[in-house]
Length: 516
Image (cartoon, rainbow, N blue to C red):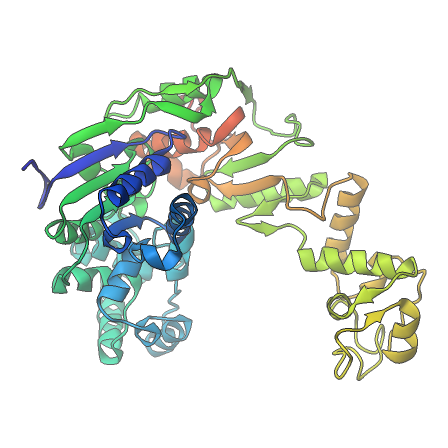
């Protein structure tokens, strides 16, 4: 039996799969699932653990399609947080929710933000207040809170305030038997519940924290075969407690997937140049997709990039920079989405189209009218008692005449939508009109996506525009430990399937320091 170890943790029977960008890591893991099914392993005895719920859902959906089984058959395809939740026998009453954080905030006179919901997007804990951020960071790293405090620097109220919040929050949760996601993992490691798994598969291992590695160790002791998959070059969540060094130092039977089906030659070349300058990594070579691709560098501004055609992923290092990008897109009259939210809601688009249909004399459905009325001002546009359409036959079709005579509509048929829909803000009206003048297809999903690099991890697009501008704080981190930022921008660059446009930094950090 091969034993592998690092730090405080030892794993055995370990197979390690390194998957550079676009090399089909999920496909490889599903092939392992297929091999296990063929050898007679029951599907519910296969543990497949992904970093985010989104990745977990994708894996189980692909498995169900590939093997003609149902989701219930793969009951152990989940996140580690979900496994802890179910293994401990918890239910919704045991989970810290917004109302609990709000109650704590009132009791402590400190504003605490529930950030656990962001685990679904990033797989990482993201907190808007410094107290929750540091308390969680200490837990996931299994380090004393005062150590994390001193490493971070300034905290409002200093150590005494942070320690007070930590103690009070612990007491609050203990008295009410409440857990956040990190608490669940810690409690799992404490209780070490029995597992019926025969096979353990862990994806995105470079993003796991110390306590999550401990959880894997607890499971591994009870299984026959272990597969750990990830890519240390894509480890971009160290700020939230991820410890990619565990994967880097892990020994065992190693497999490196060596053919990218996403990254073209031009992008592969610049990405490799960047990642080769990471000091602490597992060396790995992989071949680019056999197409030339396109790489272009731009000085300070992106308006020289033609965004009018094709699918685009626009990436920024921080949300602050992403918001600046959004403002420029709006000024340019471009239709986009940010974090899956389109710049114009589909409800508003539907209301505009409903009004245009009515103007032509055609009929619309009850649901269309109800949505349209939500943008009308009471009494000015719709008579009192009619806006909610209470008691109206939902199977009925309506034209503008019947809406006027029977359902309180006061707006004249010839009124343009941007005057008719009076509850739409003037700013939004101006923006939508500019989109329509630019022939942007607002009836469909936006072809332009704006995201932080962290938010786009696991995604891809034909064309990627990567802003290398960074905040002062990120720059300070880069100068202290450049490996972390090199990994972040490597992830950003390798989202590109065809073309990559690098926008030079406007910060004090030279452009060439990131991409040579």
